[in-house]
Amino acid sequence: MGENSELKKVVDFFVQGEYYCSRQPGSKVNEYESIKHLAFGKNVAGRTDEFIVYNSNPAHVMYTINKLDIKKDYWITVLSDKEPNNYVAEGYTIKSTEFLMILNLDNWSVETENKTIKCVKTEEESQRINHFFNKPVIDLKRLNDPNLYFYVIEENGHPTSHGSYALLDKTVFLDNVFTSKVHRGKGMAKALCGKMLIDAKQEGAVQSVLISSLMGHPLYLKMGYQDVSKMWVLEKN
Figure 1 (cartoon, rainbow, N blue to C red):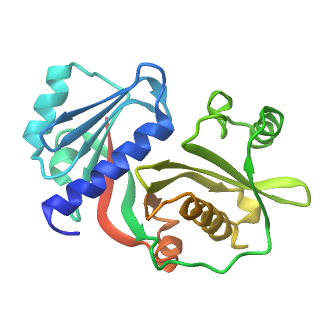
Figure 2: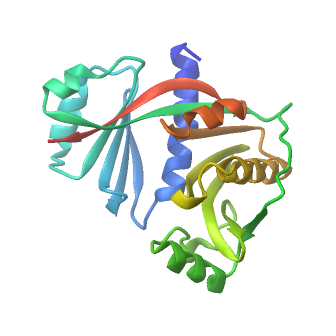
């Protein structure tokens, strides 16, 4: 995965999945050499725009952002194994450190977990889950989207974990995987991700791409995912 062509291919899968899961009316994707620009048209998870940078020097990135005249509420996500000190010197702060990962599903399998995991399909159930987590974890407007699937684990009748995936071009992009603090350490995330991957594979997926946090990284490695690149998410001070 170290070669530029392979990196670009996985970045393309990632951007496609990220865009599909997060897009709003009017959202679009632009590309400027080795920069992918997600323009959401409104604030999504803390940013209106995100610049995903691979094989591009910081001067070109700064020039591109200045030319677009984007002043605030944007992220720069740099794919690099080295800490992006050049950006820090330009007044950016590292918001988070993440990992771009890939999994080949051809020979992949996982033991099924004895947990109540289901795909959420009704508005009534979605509203109940959103109310429980006190945030819109399920987009009611996209329940009928044929390429987007929302999942939840329940224990004793109450939601403990949620997640979703987009299935595009035989690639499954896992997104928004979360477990309540009181239920962590019980294998919830592994069971949830395993179930989503099994279902996506049955729908024709041949590979999976995801973005992992530092906390989730060991789990995904155990599930068979491989690192493609470290990712540094930066915000302007």
